[in-house]
Length: 145
Image (cartoon, rainbow, N blue to C red; front, side, top):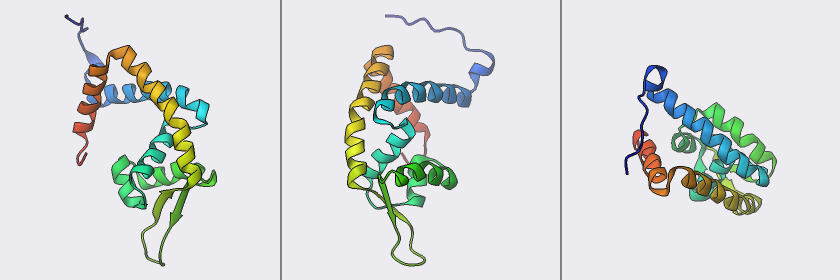
């Protein structure tokens, strides 16, 4: 089956603009679903990364998330205040280590259903294979992933 592709011109030729527009669209889609768990997709992503990488240092998490440290710290603050994320350092010069609390693990489990419904909606819109291909293409651009 042939898919109609419109000719791409002007600002749409910019890879960065295309990625940002896509990111904003996906953020809205996932935020709409995750609102039922009182989380944004950014918060969900941080909880999921912390579940996957317990006791991760802040600097390692900034690299994994491809975020500036100040942006990451700002994003973590509400999760810490809610009791979902714990931080610790074992000495005055030790790296700060982050982990999920038991409440954080529960919140992540609660939110996974809503995240999956967002995944399903996207896959219904563009097709499962295309969604997987887009994800793989986007991840391939990021060094170290």
